Image 1 (cartoon, rainbow, N blue to C red):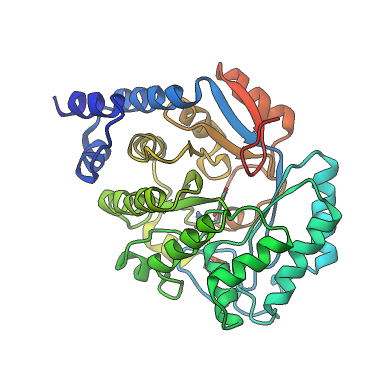
Image 2: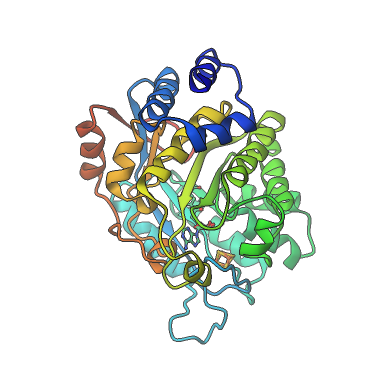
Length: 357
Ligand code: V47
Ligand code: SF4
């Protein structure tokens, strides 16, 4: 049977092809698919499940772009719900989290029309000086590309300056679906997939590790999902530096793509996506079950289907909440550890660089 053939290959450590991954999405028996992904996860990480005490800081919702799936951004900065935190406000948010033991600041925002690049450098340098021990994971490839265009600079020089100010890792946002065609359909004004890849290539070469996301459950096909993952796998071969792959469940509320799509993808599809990713992405260490988007129950099940990371305590998240997320605003350290223990697994606290504590 086709499943057994692919299973043997994957368990022997042989890379599966794009065609085989699409076959798994379409035809693999669900329970067996989850078991295979779990076996691969256990070979790498045993019973460990990684988590981070972190805080998300979405510093502004003003954005010059208008991606069709985004319910978070405001085009007009004088809109009553637009905001743009000052650096002291950002420091205050960070301090709150660090007093609760945060080891990572995850900082992303819209593309604000007014700030110059120096503002972002100041943001990172101020945080670094105030909180020397915390990991600063900041700015998606879309923001980095925007800073380069703003200052008529190369991506390399932008990243070098941010690294010098204290930036240690890039988050994985903005990837959506990298392939042309569908990318233009869902976020035509955004940087291209090739540009996203190039930012991460340069970052990895400069010693700045990163994550990679994929927005799924909208109008994409299984071929699109696998093609997207194939681009990431190829980049990791060429310029290693990805820590984690994070499938992001499309949330349809308050956005134009959502009006077209209607509902969130099924729980089974969310878990299948985690499982196929674990099997296909043989060169990426972790598949992250981002509980804010998967939902807590699905995230628990994903821990038995290939996921080895739960992301974090988060505290405050605005992007998915704007698009209808029902998950709460944060998990306590105790709740996070208990969730993992209740699944018969072992919690491992990490920071953004996957140093263990
Ligand atoms: O890039 C926007 C996505 C991303 C919607 O690197 C939506 O560790 C679902 O990248 N439904 C930001 N998703 C979040 C992100 C992330 C999250 C957690 C961990 C990491 C990491 C990165 O949110 C955006 C976009 O792809 N997004 N709108 C929506 N309606
Ligand atoms: Fe702006 Fe990001 Fe929203 Fe696109 S997804 S409109 S780039 S904030």
